Amino acid sequence: MDQINSPAALPKVIFFGNGPLADATLAVLRKHTNIIFHARTKDDLTEVARLKHENPDALGILASFGVLIKPDLLQLFEPEGILNLHPSLLPQYRGASPIESAILAGDTDFSYSIMKLAQAMDAGPIYHQETFTNLPLDKASIYQTLAKNGATWLVNHLSEVRQLQPTSQDDTKATYTAKLDKSLSDLRPADYSAAEILHQIIAYQNFPKPKYEFFGKKCIILKAHLVDATAIVCDPSIINSVASPLMIKCQDRNFVAVDELQPEGKKPMSAKAFMNGYGKAH
Image (cartoon, rainbow, N blue to C red; front, side, top):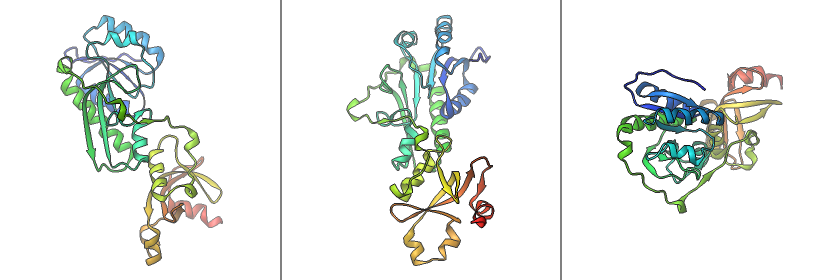
């Protein structure tokens, strides 16, 4: 829990959130609102209720909180409700891992939705949505882009949000995502195409961390790229120009080339440095 002092003239906000989406959202909100409280855990909700009673004009903003908020607390924030910045084009990708699920699906467009929090998971009516096309396929960058733009929209519309009418979602078009867990960490290239393995490497950065074993050493793969097997057959010299020393052959016989990795208990290093240190011993 923390209490944060901001200029009294700014709109008061009670913020709910944890993780990279919350951090990036909060970075924008701090500059333009008075964050009177940041709720991080279930235990913080008692303080949220107390502060809301003391500050009835305070708005609630949520980004990746992961805690169920009960109806009595939601009611305190009526009529506009708690504003939830969700990183998907709802009703698609409801749930705990929308960005990761979109990356795994091979999406090239990424979206955020500003919705009114409801008891049903990510099912509340929508105030605003925005989509970004052809973003760099980098998980951290996608989080930053969606959070920054979503938070900016919130800042620009807080003064009028009580007059806005959100639009109901079409539940028949809803898709759902699952919470990531450590069982996903070990890559299985024999079961997936090279593109699918690359998407797993990108989606699992930070958590659950994509891992693969080279020369008996389990490593976290930090950066990688695709290599078309057809191109290698046509021109074997391509190995020296576009590929890394570490190649993972996948189900479709194409390759994922590892650019940067981190052996267990060691610092991150390039594939070349890894080969110089570990490959020569085999």
